[in-house]
Length: 120
Image (tube, rainbow, N blue to C red; front, side, top):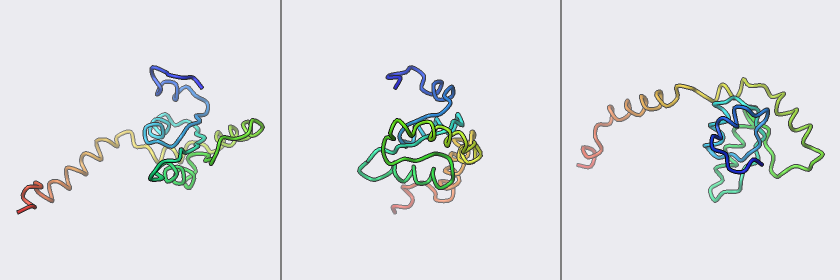
C-alpha cells in the first residue's frame, strides 16, 4: 500500500499489523520486529511460500489466508492477528542466529575436512 519505501524494516517495526506474502526476507523482518502478521502466501513454482505459511500458522505466529480477504473481514482479521501475541514469533527469531549458524557450519566443516580431500 505504501509503494516503494527506503527502509522497510523501519516501516515494519512501526506497523500495528503487517500484511504480506511469505518470502524469507519479509518473514525474517517481521519476526525480528515481532509484529503481528497476516500472511497471504504467493503461488510459487516450488511451494516454498505455502510451506512457510503452513509453518507460521502451525506454531501460531501468523494468521494465514489463501486469498485477499473481503473488506468486511479486515477488522476481525486484524484483531485476530493482534490477539495471537508474540510468544510464537519470539521463539522463531534468534537475534544471535547468524553467529550460531556460522558456528554450526564451521563445526560441520571442521569434522568433514576440506571438500577437495573428500574427492580423492
